[in-house]
Image (tube, rainbow, N blue to C red; front, side, top):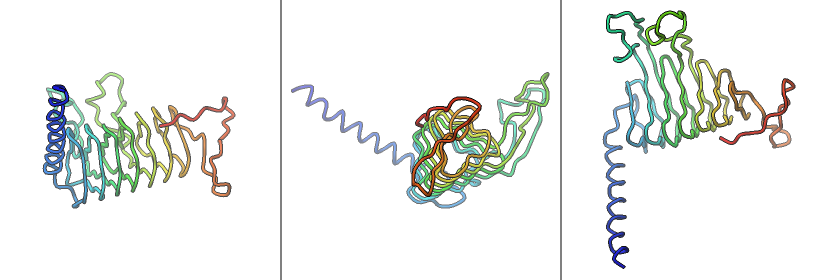
Length: 229
């Protein structure tokens, strides 16, 4: 009986703290390039250059998410103490459509442009960046060589991006595509297809005539099983 009596105020306090955290999170959102409605980005979070980020209505991103529209490289701790690093400037932007959702730890890092269309669903720990660290020299630490291969990324409407997916520069993910867990996406993924692996490759596609998924036979090896995101 005593335990039940003590449990009720603890539960009530927990609910109150959760509500307070939500209110603080909403109130402390920065000013984006537009004025999105019903936006939730849970704490903790990191948002860089919000004036370069456009966010749709009804977007909900879980905790530990990063939205970074970079304008310079390197940041503070990547600079060489004696200035022996490549310095770059960027005109970047991030565009997020309506009703985009992410479980947690979504990282979107733009040096040029990343577009995420309406109704895209992200599982946890997804990393998207439209540039990579340069590897022009094998003698100089890579963090001092600047960014390279800077090419826009687009993720199509209604896509499902699975756990721990990495999307690399220049990739277009077609609408209604599925990327399986732990995939590294190095090239375009067609609309209404299922892809997974490192590098990700298409294993199924949606057949409009039959209204069903069809398996893609890859004769390089045996058919791979579908891994759910």
